[in-house]
Length: 158
Image (cartoon, one colour):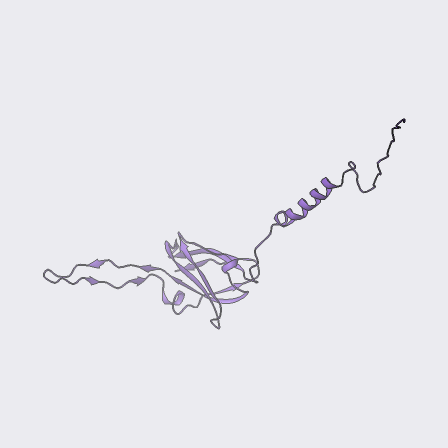
């Protein structure tokens, strides 16, 4: 019996431009789809909240330390941050919904404990003092308009 060598012609597919194997193309396509969020800059869902950052100065100098709070008119929204070397930042994930907010700043100077008179064993502690005037603190008149996206709010306290 004589065996003949059969030549089988491989089918060609017009959608395969660089060869005749479909698997590498499928793998490349899936890799591209899987990496699409990273390529587009996937951002966390903030629920419509906006971030705010800025500077706070007291008497023309950056406020060494303190806190800043943003409170909505009806009191339903509130967020804030720590102020360090005059700068603060509220990230969008902890931020505010767009609207108008009252801004309150606080910076407490801690008073040292003083020794009582000789023979008296009790110590007298002087009261802590807030460096920020009431019109920027408990009775604040300062307001900030928060819009969608990133916001900058700088506050100069005389």
